[in-house]
Length: 168
Ligand SMILES: Cc1cc2nc3c(=O)[nH]c(=O)nc-3n(C[C@H](O)[C@H](O)[C@H](O)COP(=O)(O)O)c2cc1C
Image 1 (cartoon, rainbow, N blue to C red):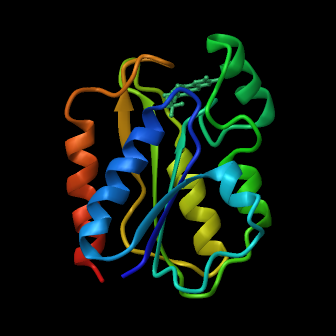
Image 2 (image 1 turned 60 degrees about the horizontal axis):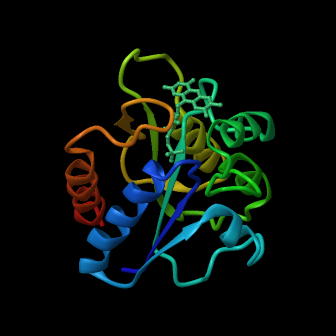
């Protein structure tokens, strides 16, 4: 199985999860992890050999980020990882192969737990494009906007990745 894990991340939490997930998927075949802006620069289609697409993004303002929320994030820290586009903009241009298997995850603050999900929006978009989800959208928790992952979330991500290959 060939997997592609694409992530958007401002401060590194979603990136760390994506890398962990890709490493776990690597036990089952080639697995590449790539930042969304870098993947978008390769064009609107995915490589033909991708069997499983995993998409991860931070929750911004109750959903997927926008240019305005990414700009707010940049003000917070000075620099951000996904400095060009977000998953929202990438998905808008992505040509989805019907039947493509995918899973979506997001990161959001543990306390206070606010409503809203980027993963659900990603899931909804990809299903509307004809892709097949292998599991419901998954949320992982961070302590605060830029304060990193809650303990145990990398292990949880690794376990989650194991369920993705099990459903093959
Ligand atoms: C502009 C902005 C808006 C945010 N909005 C929300 C939100 O609505 N709900 C939430 O739980 N977290 C929110 N957060 C916190 C992000 O989810 C958190 O920064 C992210 O999960 C960290 O992942 P990253 O390190 O990969 O960027 C927001 C963060 C920023 C910068």
